[in-house]
Length: 429
Image (cartoon, rainbow, N blue to C red; front, side):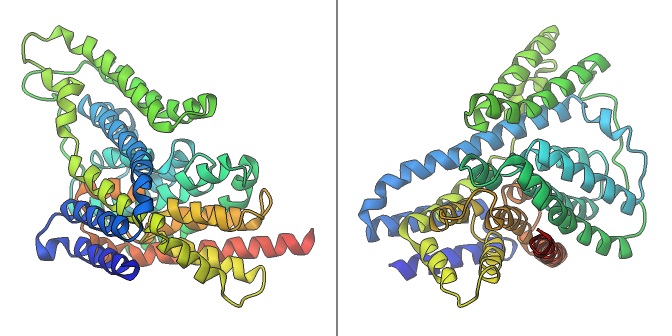
């Protein structure tokens, strides 16, 4: 049964990757995968039944966070709020626009987090590029930038938050140790793309009316934009001050925006302009991508509870390298695995196995980098990738062909920079 769970998990991933070939929605496959793997797991180890509720709670935190962020972004977009930013980005040159969007994503991700930032930037991207193929390329790079930006900040990624809260890294040290490597992991793909990407992007046609004859007034657009962006920026502040889960801050921000928009739409009579109400906006959210997230994360958590991931960690720990090469290798492999298996259980396993390492040990900071950026190699390897995949309907195989090698090149370059940086520091300290 132990091996059968792994086989079914791998088969499920293959079916997800071949979504357009077999013509079965990836969300349906992911849900079935989660149910089957957990059923086998409980049959194999009945004592893990209690873990199901625990893991569902952890996954639900991410799902409600995702639902709140997507609703806020969709509402700001519906009111035309993103025009405040897009109207100031005048260039249509693909290369310049790629660098602007990527660097903006990189730094925003460190302040917000990679999931929120990717959702926000894809909404912006829709106002900057109308061609689907062009938008997919930019969206793919947004995933790289969001994950790279989240890796060097203590609040930029779920795994960095885990390491920070667990007392394994300090905020200042993780920024100083991983910033350069994270930046290189983004700059290398951008440089490669800059050599061959040419031409201009085609901007979508801007309309002054949201729908019908209802016109959103400029002050309403600005108010919704400020409240919406403020709600997103409030999340890390809320978490730092209250030490409560980020999804509560996100839902609180959504509640404030909801109240504001209810007052704004009060001027309409009957159904006129009702589509501007958040109650109607919720119907526009892509719930299938949220269900995909639910299925795939529950399947991974089943492997975590039944010991498959622990067995993998023990296997890695047995390699005959000497320190520090051994731990550089282990963390590098964990990063590669995070493109297939969710990085949260991988990092959780590492926290237990290597608890003897002190605060700010190079193992922890390198783990923050690899677990954060490695997920970019496959589109379903990170929360940001799954969110963008759902929003833009990006094909798994398309991403594999067009973006994965770029992400791998950036990941390996960043690993090299981090190891070189630590080696030089050790030599001179």
